[in-house]
Length: 223
Ligand code: PMT
Image 1: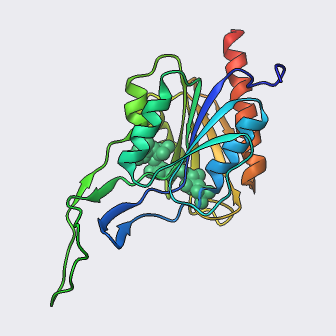
Image 2: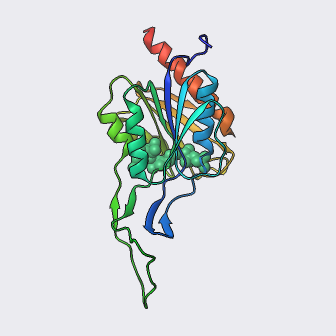
């Protein structure tokens, strides 16, 4: 319908972890379940947006009204997001993208040897930073998963990555973070607003976050 707040808008959401292969049977990853990102995609679609969900490997059903693009690694997520970026109005990056991947991917299963072992790692591309550097009117919303000094680190990421908003997630909070059904976050805006949210279900939080961002955007355009 025409009268929904995100009608005619394209929203790209990323969700879940990435997997960085070591060999055909092993990988490096993290505990993201995808619940936060899937909730955001569902909420964007319910608000009328054309919604693209770029998801790492998770165990969740595709939300109604959402186009799902499945990826595995940080490199695949980068390609998928960049290909959707040009005509996007909003990009919300809730995925927990690996910062490092094994320098070498073995084509055969690694054999165990006597003694200790180590794996050399190299940096992945920072997807959000790449988007921030080539922004052409898109509203960029990042996440910051922090264990200490969350707001301060969040503000730094907001400015370093040229974002419009960042959702700061203190992942040590027992009511939120990786894997749980609920989350506790603070929304920071580029213009200096700080909006804390109490602990609530990720689905409810996703709706409130998008509504709050839309309100802050319309305040700005009325300035
Ligand atoms: O999936 P759930 O179990 O529901 O958990 C939700 C969550 C805790 C994963 C989510 O709320 C969250 O905090 N997501 C961001 C996790 C993260 O990777 O944060 P970060 O502070 O390391 O990264 C900052 C931002 O840069 C993020 O938006 C991330 O998507 C982005 N990034 C990071 C690395 C990279 N190579 N490319 C990126 O785009």
